[in-house]
Length: 217
Image (tube, rainbow, N blue to C red; front, side, top):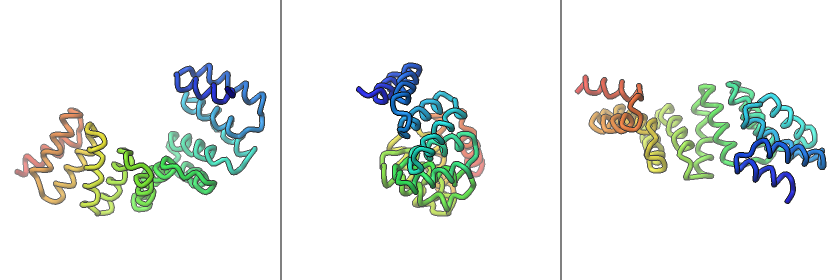
């Protein structure tokens, strides 16, 4: 078995030091393989060593500027560091060089959402759910953007889909409650807030929403 594959198997088993050893050996044998640099970068990023991970991603691009997964890796590092402008730039590059995975579209959407541009994020979240209808997080984020754009009925469907996929998604219940409250359906809104609180008793927003509705009633 190739040492790159041995490293990936080691990662699956949680043996990170062993994986790093295999990657290092693989790079000694194939120093111009960009995939090895990306995989080693992913390992370093997962272990919290973002600075070294960036160097490995950058080396992969130096060898082959079309290494889409390296751009995605750099984008993820910048996103985790809170630099959403840079993150979006590199996710765009990943897509440009052919990475059409739903995670790319999801992270493009997340970057724009963090940049307070939910309308621009909408098509990316839509594409993410089209590529993976079982992704609860993508449905939830898509719902948030729809709600902020004023498309309440469509947002409700996405929150309901989120709950179908993840029955313990407190935020989806809360936001569904907000949507019902917006429609002045206070009874259903209260049910949703109660569901959110049953899953997460310290959910402050759901608690506040419930209190306000009860006062109104």
